[in-house]
Image 1 (cartoon, one colour):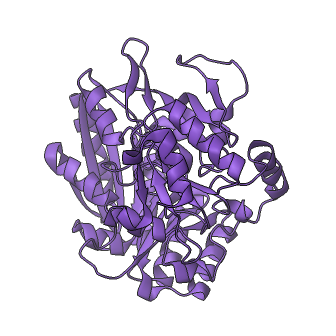
Image 2 (cartoon, helix red, strand yellow):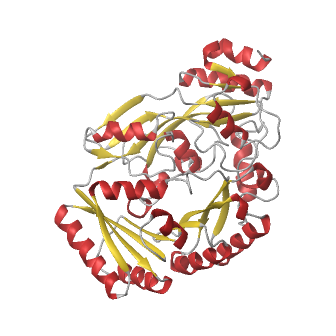
Image 3 (spheres, helix red, strand yellow):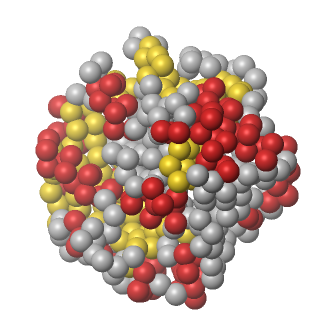
Length: 436
């Protein structure tokens, strides 16, 4: 075993350390896609407890070993390329700490899978109002670290809005806490918002507390498809109406075709409430769409569940080509126009924009990608007061382009915060904005 593996094995046990060549194939492939060069980490470590994780990070800090932190590796390739000495996974920190049913909160270790959390909450008639990428694989710590949620943001807010408290291991190995386990909590600095979306560069999350919500009695989704102008008008009418949706997503023609729900551009609008309200609102929106010449349908029960599951699946799952995934953001008022222009640049791309926030995803096959084309799409988004971040892409492409494309004025402040939290720059180095 390597020196690093031997030393860390004495902390967590040899069965909790895998050398690079022994890591399971899926995990090794995902890790390799996050590396700057073919200098692979010596091992991956799986601490069983927060205390073990603390010792592991303290050891890395003393030896100046660079650490790539992850959960179940479902998002480890997001962000900038890194050069590290070892990988630390929180996968085995997966216990339910507390589910306060009456207080509508749940506290879990960070390695707990999102799907398992929903199963636990479902038995009490509750749910976590997040819809992350790869829900069967995603861990709670990874969701917080990447601020990963989707359509439900319109009704419930983002990850940072639902996160009440957390504990984490600092770069020097010390354990720290922030927030609490109640909804109305104002104690201390709001580190939860700072850590949300920091990509593991400030500390390694060990537990999280979220607010939860009662499961709705009924749910229904209205699908409208047709021309961009008609979709834009339908969205305008929806916004000015008394209809209350929990999600309203704009879809490119490529994504509409992939889902097999019609032709042209699409608008998916979801209602959740008591059955009478869902049925009435769905019928009203369907009629509104038909008056604009749009094709429409109402999805409910199992058909609706399958529709939203397919919407979250990667592009062309059967394709052998690598896939480019970008996170985009534009002004909500410019969402339809931006969607139309992006669709012209890469006609076969799958684009989804949440109409309430202007955030979304852009996916297309790597053979259609060049640095110039990505920069053209980024320029388009920035012209609408937005952004384009390259999440997943072949290493060769990430080496040719600035993954984040950040052009704001907060870079010096972010670097200062990083220096305060991780002065030796050992946690996920170069993964965040400005190679932080």
